[in-house]
Length: 472
Image 1 (cartoon, helix red, strand yellow):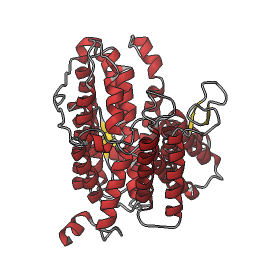
Image 2: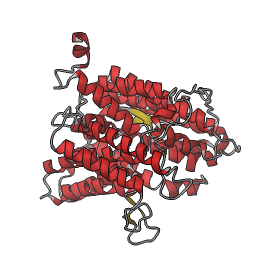
Image 3: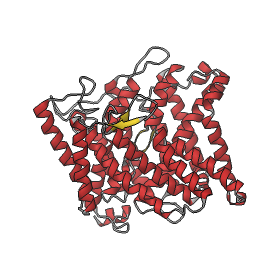
Image 4: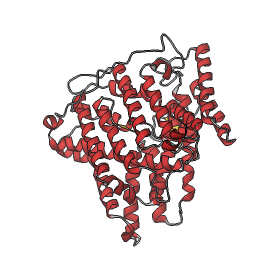
């Protein structure tokens, strides 16, 4: 235990082995939905050749990649950040990329994008960009991610939803009708209040206790009323039905490993393929940078400049996640904001990541068990953690409007556009323009100007794609 303590710096970071084990378990519970959601996204769309990925195969490689990358990150970077398939990139692949490419070719682009990020990290360019970001924007990124994951929790729980009308765009209740009457949503409310009270009273394991309580209640409700899945009947559970039918053990099908093809440049041309790589690169690069910035500050591991221990190693391993995810056809793997739930439980070291990663690897064989925790219950943890992260806004001086506007835009755009990268991009551009116009152009790093210009291209990519004939 002494060697374990020294290697992970458990005592030095004010943590305990129990807190790390508990935090790692909570992070897995909060992230377990990806085992179901990623295959739903990737297996629902046929590629240009008419081929679809099998749900069970995608589920297996999703767990494999998440487990392997989380453990690798925990050992090398020794930080409590967990990895899984990034939702922004997998949705982009399914909605846009495979319309012009095959699935192996799409995954080939993910591998290329990951190799570029690794090269940027190894050469130090990625850290230079990280260091060029002003502290108010780093704090805004943390708060924006907090508000973003809170919004994800509210949406996943069915507490807020699209109304289907221009105004108001969102309303209470699963249908946005203003009425919160669905039983799964009420289970979310119960879990949120239990977790909130425990956290407010500083009870150790408050979030975990809340998750377990919510899951037990959900299982009892399902056993009595048989709500089933929301895809089968209204008022059901959104993704995972809290029940266990049949054997809890299943042998994983890992046949998708290595199904990668780099023929996209020949199929759609070099320029069109590079534009797709550019979109993947920007989304992955800044989503991950923002997430790690926010999580490190939440864990109290960041210094006054926003840097955290083993930053260089963390950036290299994060880029490797895209390579591994593409190579196994699980889509790019990146740091998940849900890691904040484990940090909220006291996780401060890579030992928590080993726990989370080990549970993901076990989930390949125990998929039925991982599906017992409904999304509505896990969503409560996201709202709790989001609240904790938003509190960093108190450290920003809003009296200077050239600081206030970029910060507020960063925080607001992330949840409203459902994208961390979008919020960072808007914040970078607004920061460069306002600070320059306020006579503080010398305070802006040249790298920040370059990144802001890159984001302008990123936001204009739809127009650029139409100009070069890439279908979106």
